[in-house]
Length: 242
Image (cartoon, rainbow, N blue to C red; front, side, top):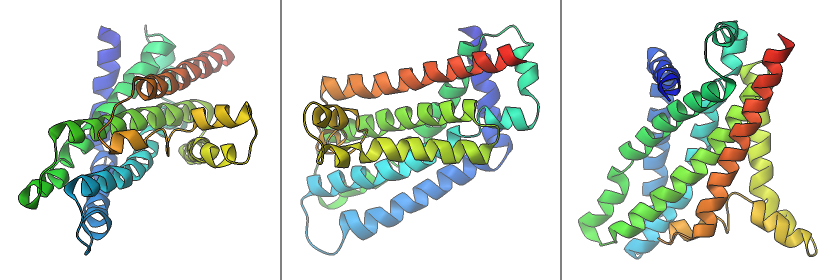
């Protein structure tokens, strides 16, 4: 556990020793603010719960893009700078490397969510929503972000460059986003399977309404763990090749 913590702190320092962490957080907050005022608030009168629902819908999309940008560099950058060899010669396992890097990216993503809290707080100026609704919405955004972080980290472990890692991660994420559209065209049992494996749409919608289903919680955690384990295997194969 101590080795995972060391890797996590190493990655956290790297986010803020360059402009990446600042740019991702600032850009995401700017877009969140623009979309909140343009679409969530809008000109037409709305119930406060509807404003909050729309906010979480839009911020989930921004969160997915931020997750891709945060995680696509984690292993691919090590390959490009040849520093992956140093990690392989250190007394750390592939699983410790992957989890340490994942937790660092998740910490930055959580910081982004924390900074965006002022937007739903603005609703309290002229309206009223339950804090349970706010908690459920952020839980959904965090779970979705964790899943996309894991997908991007897996792509980063496979790809030789950050650019290819980003493209691969975006492709896998988009595929898992549109599975619900394919499910509308498929017959049973593929219809149910495609609908179940989609990471947004019906899967994310309950969180925007302030509802947390155990099945959705288990799904997002399962997706994150699955792709993290895939990243571990990819790194093990990379080390075996030398």
